Structures are given as C-alpha cells and as structure tokens.
View 1 (tube, rainbow, N blue to C red):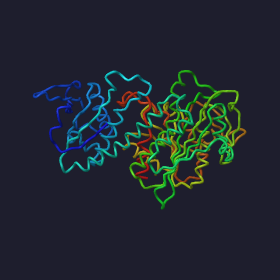
View 2: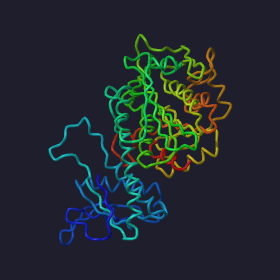
View 3: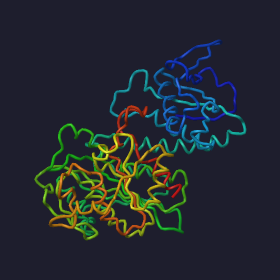
View 4: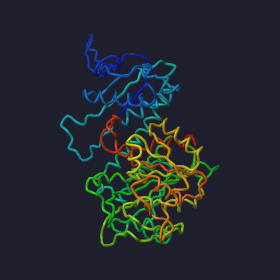
Length: 466
C-alpha cells in the first residue's frame, strides 16, 4: 500500500475523502456536488479518544474503505491529530501508518484470486499543513516498516504446519533478512548433540522433521553487551504422546508465533537503523507422537547441565526454551526477553486482550508494561513469588515441566514462567512474555482472521527505549 503525504490541495477524482461523524448511527458513503465522494466514518467523540481507541479508529478507516471496495482514499491529517493519543506529530503519523498496514492485511496465499482481484486498499493520501509534512513523512515511513514486519510475522505464523516446518521456517527467515546487516546461522541436530541440548532434541524426537536452532545476530554497536530475544518456534504442536484434544489442535501451527515475532522485530530494527547489539534465538521444532517420541517420565539434560523431568509432553515449549536460555549465557547479555505462546493458562487468567508479563526486576517490568501500552501490544504483570518454585521441583530431575504437586490446572502460566526462570538465573535483566492469550486476532481488534503478529511492535519499542 502506498502512503503519501502532501500539502493541502485537491487529491484527485480517483480518491475518496474520509470524514468522521461522531453523531451518526453508522458509517456511510455519500456523493456530493461535482461527484465528490466522501466516506463518513462513525467515530467516537474527540474528547473520548485515547491511544487504544485511536489505534482502532485507524484500522476502522481501512476496514470501512475495503467494505466499500475503495482503492484510494484521502485523509486530512488535522482530523486525526488527537493530542490524547500522542502529543508528538511524528508518533501520531507512525501509529496511523502502522495500523493502516495491519488493517489492510489478509492471509490469501491459499485462496483462488477473484476475477476482480483482491480487495486491498492501494493508496492513502494524507494532506497536511506545509510545516508539518516532513515530520509526518518520517512517522509514516517508520510506521510502515513496523506495520509491514508485523504483517510478515502474521504471514509465516498463518502458514499451515505442513508448509512451515523447522527447515522451511529457517529458509523463510533467511530470505526475510536478505539485504539487512543481520547474520544468521542454524545449528543442526549433530551440533546440538555436541552442545548437549537435550531439551530441544528430546522434544523433536517424535518427528520426521529435524530440529533447527536459529541464531540471528545484529551487531550494530561496539560499546555494549547485547540484548537477547528468545522466541518459541514450535512449528506444529500435537502435544506429543500427551496428545491434545481435537478442538485445540487446528491452531497449533501458530505455536511458532514467538519465534516469528523475534525474527521480524529484528528485521524492523535493522530497517529502522537501530544502533544496538541484538541477538535472537529461535529453537524450531515439531512436537509429534510416534514410536520415537519422548515420554512422560523421561529426564532430559539441558545445555546448562540442569535436568528436566517430563511430567507432560504437551508442555514442550518451555523445554526447548530452557536450552535457548542456556545457550544465551555465552553472549553475556545485558537483557533477555523471552516471548512464547507458552500456555493456554495465560488466556484463562487474562482473556484475549493482554499477554502475561513476568519479571523479577520491577523496574524492567514497569518499563515493559509502559512500552506495551504505547505499542498496542498490551501486557499485564503476573507474580514470580518464591513459593511457586516448590511447585515445579522434580522428583527425579532438577525441575519438572509441569506442576509436580497439586492441581496442574491452577497457576499454569506462573509455573511455566517459574520453570523458565530456573534457566535464567544468570541474567540480571530478564522478562518473559506469555503470548498464548494473544496469538490469534480478537474480532474487536478490527483485523483479518488468523495470527495477530503480537510482540513485534513491543519488541521494537524495547529495542528503542531500554
């Protein structure tokens, strides 16, 4: 989609003007004098607009335009310059472009192209005062980069599990980083065996697809230790021998959303020219049942030396992430952020409107909470109290991958986070984002069905501001 900023003037006959009507019953399309076309969008009162409502209003513009089969629209920037959303002109433009791109996306890869073509908006023209054009252009450029990388995350997350194996995920990421300063290496099964990554190898044992440990390095600063992102990359999760109920399996191609978010947040950072050291780890694995599968009761030794007692093969993501945390130690990171569709329990606790945030560092947690609100990827803090540590003690291994005493249904997201913390003790700054509640779009978000791209925008904010 082309987004152009111009001084206030006539946009041209092909463009439909966007106007806002807080007092109308519903959005409507009107044709006025000289055949001037206007789409009047039902909007909240200006006094009621906050940042969250502004994001939705930007998406609504695109959704309404698509509903009326429009290809080109023109918007007066002054109509969307809400100080309650941001006092910064450039940031307002960034939010607009980001959400225009996200609202214009649909996953159509496997659909037959209609005769009339896909219903995507082609061009948005934003008219503004001459003095504001440069700042708005800067914001638009940045917003489009982040919006497009969020959509790229959605695209690979939406891919069926049969077409997005660990090997294909590595190939897709390699293509996506082309032209950026990001370097990539992939640890194969033999190298993982030498390193002692028993967690990843154990989970992958049941699948014919070999695991891949994807390492991304973006080293654009010489002065500081790196920020490390770790993203869960389970390309399909059947639950293993503890097989999932049928109602819970069809969306399990989305279990690599955290890994996709890490890759595309780093690509966005590279395109934005962020001058930092950033490293990303994506343990890419299939969790399948077979005669070779790892079993409940198995004990797996991780790269850090700690052992994991397998209480349930469907709590596999945390096992693979344990090895990723151990491997991260060699980089001596100043900050580690883990992002994963780790538990359904996060959704039980928070519904579908926030990811669960865990950190022992209150200052870090508070900052991530603030940045999450700004980015449009909201989170809510959850506890990591010492008492929960007793719940994941193994009987015959160091830690159990599921609550070992009491009802495992209770506190599942917390127990998963406590498990990861066991492998993150050497990191002074560490945070875990459980996006199991947010990987799929909620209808209220005014986005197309499927993957939400959760995490990309927040990770970019973290890179910019922490």
